[in-house]
Image 1 (cartoon, rainbow, N blue to C red):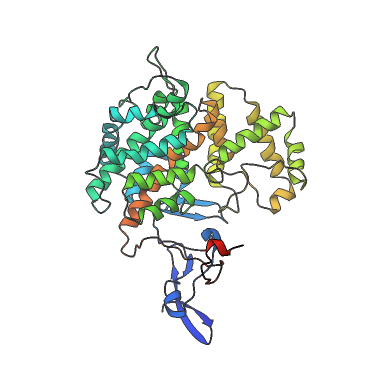
Image 2 (image 1 turned 90 degrees about the horizontal axis):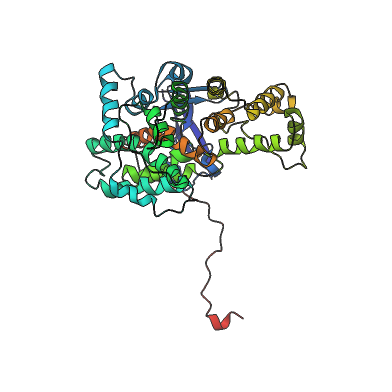
Length: 429
């Protein structure tokens, strides 16, 4: 028997179906509410509103669980690669050896940009934010592949998927190269995904660039940890924009714009800025945390707490370990890492932060890794784009295949003026 909830309003009763997911999450289906009772729901930020059914990512914020297609993030981080995880998100199952090899080859075939695309970069100011450049160039790719834009054609969508996964790292690296006045390098298809990106970012035509396998592995790990995270702001944006039947390039460009916001993709940059402030002011972790508890102090603790996780972010533990491995490999003494470790140790023993469930999140250590390998602060959010790309595409593809999909059209509660008559300008006093 299907479970139902009852809503009583104005002498009428409406039965609302209760939908249960595979992990026993329950949702009340209110799709008939306006039709039957003339009511809508009001939910600022959509924090209690389920916009879709999805089989891609499961999060239990209370227990600190993150799974892609049922696989725990801890197992994928330890055993998998970013492109294997991308396949998993896109297709729902782990690939066979042959499938993964073919997928990698397809990505390698599309890493280069059309020479005319490369000319776009010269039109941007040197100080242009790389997220603005990435959003613009990704959207512009649709003009170069005009015969492959039909969202209802699986073959065209698959080819666009491969092109995006292959070209976005090239676009990101070129945005960086443009900002520092260095020449653009062509991709090296003999390298793996992360190594090729490091080559595009840091190599020059003048001398050989040696890619450290520990650094490449850490970068690949960071991409895995960011690959999808359920219906967050940028993912919901990709779905909402995609619901209009716009092409995949345009939908992904909208996701980049949403991620650019400091409340979404800019958190690891905020962590680095906080650590730099602590270091410049000569504070230790304990003194800084005490100032954060003072209501009259403007300092804020960044990288702790999460909108979804009310326990430890499972990704934070994985990144912390990788952070130490990278810095040890590079032989780098990093004062900010020392401060970060102290902040974590003190906060985890302080009732103020424990009672508020403020635990380190994925952003707390990721910025230190990026900075250690030479990625500038304004590129941190771009790195988030590289990781989140397969998740965005998977969510877009899932929506396209959903028989119940409709163009997104939220409602509102109008609070403006009621009907009034127009007053000629010479009578308005």
